Every structure is written in structure tokens, then in C-alpha cells.
Length: 262
Length: 162
Image (cartoon, rainbow over all chains, first blue to last red; front, side, top):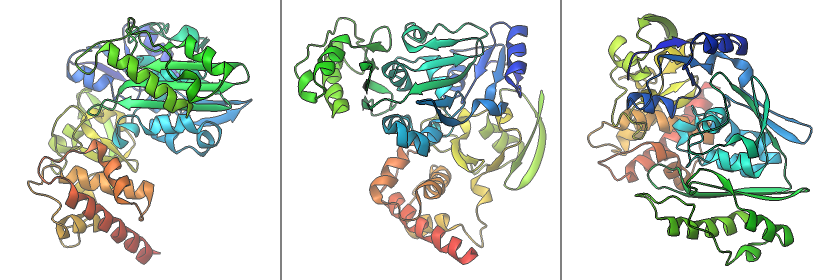
């Protein structure tokens, strides 16, 4: 790891000032991605601003038909939350399937969403549920937020504060995990609400998480695994790597989609 | 250098550290608590698992400075040579180790999973919960048995304390 200067602000305002004073500073949330990247010298920030000291960024509440999750809430806290289990049990199950127990005790929802790893689980839930990402500057809709591999519309000095997930009639996430890393080789999130059905795919897309309109149309007409059985999944926009070819990922999308619909 | 104050095994310690110091290096180098190991150094093997504020974490993937004000418990803090923690006793009884390198992390992970899942944790759950701890010797069977026994021992210890 290269040397860096460290700041641990105790309020959002202090964090804002630290970011403004040091352009290029990296925000440290749970550190389960950033610290390994720094150890490998893939990331070499001169300044790290640790959000761990800001209590306001943690916690889960339910308000106006939505679950609000603070950016620094750990995966373990989401997985164990009685509020999430009652309103969106599929989201609690998603959180319980990230990494391993020790990683879940440190890793945070804000860190995961901001990093937008193409194999991460949370982006699929954010997109399928049509969640709103709130930052220190604005509110960003899920359809606008993700912006390609490891990329979002977040600006350099913008901090995610919390994410609002509208409570759906039904929400489920099915993942085929890479057996070594537990990242999604393919993950499919399906949300059914009054406004319709939304389907999001992670782990597979060459540009990261994306929606599957033809599955949404089929499920809106008939919400059953049978309705999407035999759905043709286009493999031309999917990743091929040492873990899986695009064709295999396309096949797995169909399987995970049917499992998520149940 | 930055100053950090945290509590390790009940003792409050203050030190000046380079910001890039990982918690595991702080424990091993500054405090000479070498029971916590570095195996893979890439957040996979779990040899470095310690408890921070009552939860198991990988100390090779946490900055020491991020633990300011926290309560840290390491393998050295759970029992003594004369009176082992029930989870340590169970690992000995079931011969749940061969080389022993992963054992501190396994025991800290075992205690954490019993804290979260309760004493009646079943074999399948234990195996699932050991996702983040790798043992290259035992094949895990005795580790799983030890955690089952250790869970019962922890329940008995808790009952005795009440």
C-alpha cells in the first residue's frame, strides 16, 4: 500500500470540507474493496476520508412505503434487520449472500453501490426496485445512477447518505455465485409492484447492471416462471471471461430469472 | 503518523501509527499479539479474524485507524492457558486442527457465529458460516464438530454466569 493521509470526519459537513480540500481523495466506507485494491496498488489515493465516524449514515427505517437504509449500514445489519425482513425479505436474503460473514460485518451498502462492481449484488436490487440514491447534493433515480463498469454518475465530492427502496408487492433475487469469490456470475432481481414489473441483471452485462425489458413485459402479462420459460436472452452484450462465456451467462440469466420469479 | 486509541482485550492502548497500518499489523507488531495470523492477505482465508465491537471481521482488510474507540478482542483475549474458552476447549477435544495456522481465526469465527445464531446451530449452518475461513489440513469435519460442542459449552458458560 502506498502512503496516504487519513481523515476521519464526524459529520457529513466535515466530510464535505475534507473532500473539497483534497481533490482526488477516496472515500472509505467498509473498505472491503478499497483496502484490497490499495494493498494491490490498483488504487493509490493520496488522501482517504473514512466515513466510519459519521453515525448519521447508519441505520434502517421504514417511512412512506419505503425502506431507508443509511449508506454506512453493513450487509450484516441489512441481513438481520427485522424491518427489512418484514417489508422486503428478498433484500435481506440478498445481503445475507454477499461475500462471507466477516466481510458482511464490515462491507456497506453505500460502498457497494458507489463502487458498482459488475459482479456486485446490491446494484441489481437498486435497479429492480427503482430505488432512489440520496447523496450530500441530490437524489438520483436508479435508472440514472449506474453508468457502466465501476462507474456511476456520482461526482468527485459527492457522498451517498442513504438509499430509499420502495416496498414492492414481491421482490426476489437469485444468484449463481462464483464459488470462490461469491460475487455474482449472474444475479437476477425481480420486483413486482403496482406500477409494473422490473427485472435487473448483475454479474453478466458487459456494461454492468442492466434491465431486461422483454422479461418485464412477459412477467407483467403473467407473473410466473412459465411466462419467461424459453425467453431468448441476447448474449451479444454479455461478458466473457475466465469464469464464464457470454453464452453460458445468457443461459444462467434464464435460470436465475425463473428462480427469482419462483 | 496519526494517533489512535482503542481497547484490545480489555486494555486501552494509544499509539502513533502510519495511516496505512492494517489492524492485523497493529496487533502483531505494535502489541505483539501474534495469535492473530496473516494467511492470504487478500481477505479470503480468515486466519486474521478478530472481533471488533463484538463482530467478527478480517483484520487484514481493516485499517487500525478505522478502529479508533472500538473494542477489539483477539484469540489472546478469550481464555487463559489454565482455563480455555469453551470454543478453544472444544477444538482441543475434537482435534479440530493439524498445523494450527487457521485455528485462531476459526475459533474467533466460531464464537461469532454462536453469538449470532445461538447454541443450537446445526451442521449445515456451521458449514455455511465458515465460508470465510479456509483450512488446508483438516477437511473441516472436526472443525464443524468442535464448533457444535463449543456452542453447547458457551451456552453452559452463559447459564452458569446467570
